[in-house]
Image 1 (tube, rainbow, N blue to C red):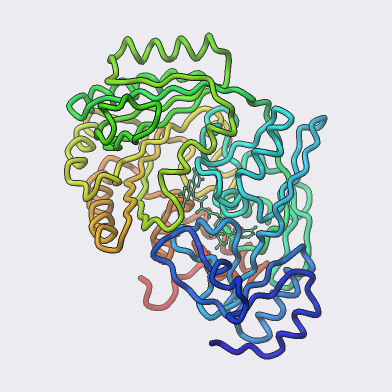
Image 2: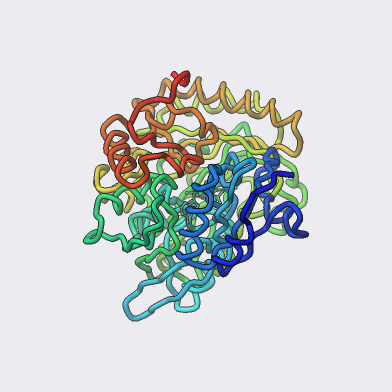
Length: 472
Ligand SMILES: Cc1cc2nc3c(=O)[nH]c(=O)nc-3n(C[C@H](O)[C@H](O)[C@H](O)COP(=O)(O)OP(=O)(O)OC[C@H]3O[C@@H](n4cnc5c(N)ncnc54)[C@H](O)[C@@H]3O)c2cc1C
């Protein structure tokens, strides 16, 4: 058991709970989403506001403890838990308040996407966020934030208006386009490098409460044709719609899948219409006419249900790995390559995910935010492996890496989306994801706000912009 001296002082200073190994809640408090992560921090401080965060940072620094920041616990490598260190746990900061008149929401730095959606949908409003509802709004936003609404209303960061940030020195700053604009730029994609965000202010959009969902499923032999159809649909996708294609996915034993197809592997195009029922009906008809699916599920559904639809795909404890890359377009060569690599996948829970970009994402100039990915590309490809145990985990990683290598020849850049980057510790990958210009700008801002790199358990931007010794 790691002994930390002076815990009573910290307990007297903060309003939130300080959890150490003797606490009955320690095991739950240190657990995160990824099944392979099993770290034992010395302390977990459940902060109730900026003053607690500042006190926790100061305490950790004085005692030389490594500091991590935990929002929703979904980081791919569990970097929100510092082994033997101090965790700033933001889960108490989950409250969301909405101003329907001005279409703005104030969201606590530890709220989940489910908290945010529940509060905003009470007013028929929403922030574009991600695809799994128990992700932390904090980690997702700071990395960019992409999901069903991105084509219609942009990335999460494109809708960020202001933030409350506690810096490494313990100062609480209000950050916006007018206040600390350099930091505001860096927060919109630069990850958790610059401080602890205790609150976010978002612009809201009118969404739902009912939206239109369509799932279209084809057998593997129709994969290339399904991909070509998906490409055509994406090329003329209505602005108020979302698009995603899962190649090599297994049809779940769910009510919307005819029983004879449960467990069948194939290609699934998922479209979501946020506009009128007529607009969705035209889109669905084009898909059916283009290539009749093996089965289809089309239905209006509440937006909050859409946001939870994929929650079962990767439950807590999953051994997950992913490599992502951006594509200008889904060329015939890429389609052939995708179809070639799918049969090699290690398990029925490995698949290739194609996320449709464009629309509102491409309305924002690349340099306007620190977002790591590509805004001009039409697609993001993810080689995803979700495994139940360590053995299949290793095989899944090997498959994802080799498919990624093979598909890389079709992309012109080396950008990756840091939110989907599982090799966090690969500094070269982090730099390449931002590109040299953005990375150097981020490094200058890092040097100003966190010169000692206190917040380094993330896709790390080093304050001097150099690689760590031995990492190249
Ligand atoms: C199953 C799954 C599905 C996903 N789907 C999507 C998706 O659809 N779209 C998408 O964009 N991303 C997606 N992601 C990626 C996800 O957004 C990132 O992993 C994100 O970092 C998770 O945030 P968190 O708060 O839950 O994680 P945590 O592990 O709690 O935090 C991750 C890191 O974020 C930083 N951080 C978190 N909160 C704060 C804060 N308030 N202030 C400062 N730093 C903070 C810290 O550096 C921390 O180490 C998915 C991840 C998983 C595992």
